[in-house]
Length: 188
Image (cartoon, rainbow, N blue to C red; front, side):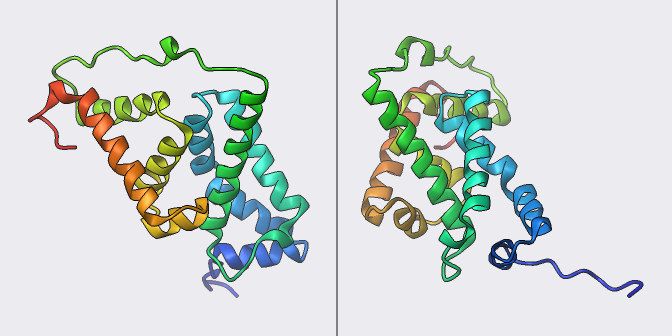
């Protein structure tokens, strides 16, 4: 079939192929989601590269071990981020049980200089999320970084859309207060 284009399969079709034992389908899904999930884990787990890599490996092991847990009636992207969210939530619970608390002083970032580029501002905003609760940080990342609509986030996290909106509002308010000295230069 010289010159024929190879049809790109949807995530859901790839998951079906994985259920049938297709290793190549797994590789394709991994390539599609590894960077996005790594970034999500990195931000959710205190900017730890080691934890982000461990959790990335865990989420893909779940796909390998039990691909049948995926319900093809729902979007794969929604499902995989739900799994990622639950892994983070479980990690926070483990930390609470062991009485491990993040040192809040380490999470305080220096004040932003008055003249910053938009890219630098965006980077600082995402760094500032570390001081927020896991719930607020996750909703913010899913909506603004991954582009999930409010309804999908609510479904993934098992909460009401109004709760998602409230968490987004509170996070935006927190960021606006934190960066109020830049008011007028950028709109939040």
